[in-house]
Image 1 (cartoon, helix red, strand yellow):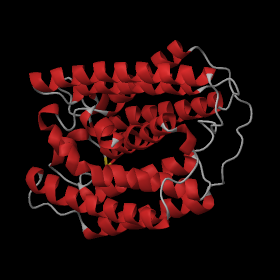
Image 2 (cartoon, one colour; image 1 turned 90 degrees about the vertical axis):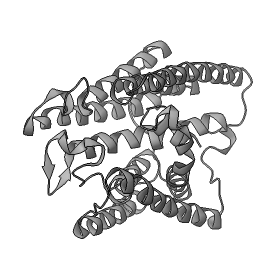
Image 3 (cartoon, one colour; image 1 turned 135 degrees about the horizontal axis):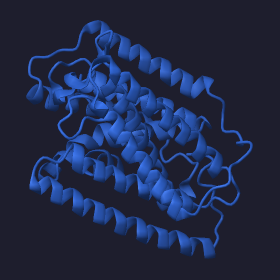
Image 4 (cartoon, one colour; image 1 turned 90 degrees about the horizontal axis):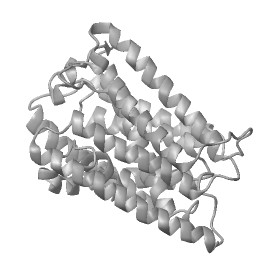
Length: 326
């Protein structure tokens, strides 16, 4: 349930005035991410595998379901700039990073924090995992028959692109689940700052990501670029995300890292991501007021969870480490 609430409603891509649509997104978001989590846990993989499967998820959603990666009309994304073999490269980068963080990684981690005794264990049996996969496929169909039909009527992605997307999804799945090594200790952990600095750093990083990858303030391309110059913010965004990932992985490998440090990073990212939605996605007063309310609710919810985690620190239980496995 966290996945469409965070990735759609809390961003504003599904406006608050149309919040009921979240129900339609539960199959692809909820079952899709649940499937990713189950496969990775069952095969003993870790976050690199999750992020590779998140890239596969983005291809399924935006490439096959929405067909936004090749469309000339959907979401006005065709104006974003550079196309590579007909694929909208800036749109793809923005969404593959966004989904990896806000659709996949944060909901999985929050669920770990809420239900720590289940961390590192499968939630489902094998039949349940198969059902999750079937529901996710149904979700792709729901997406295909709802958004493009109304927003981009008559458009059909080229068959070579669809087939290529399917092959890419299979290849990413094989690499993530069969090639990427199993969970290993991370050498040379980094020292890390206070939770307040982690909160602020995560928020600032997300806001910079939005500036680099989404058009805003009347711009038609990310970072107010024109034509192929859009490559500059694309490279900068990729470098930002790679540096952030490596830094977080090494900091969280420290024995002194706690669940509350993880929550500080998540809280900063979530609040900043809704602030970005105010600029990028909100077009009416109701939408803006709704996102401001969501920011307040996010702040309250993370504060309450922080209190719960603090209590847990003083009453230790036999709980697996939060950052070692999904």
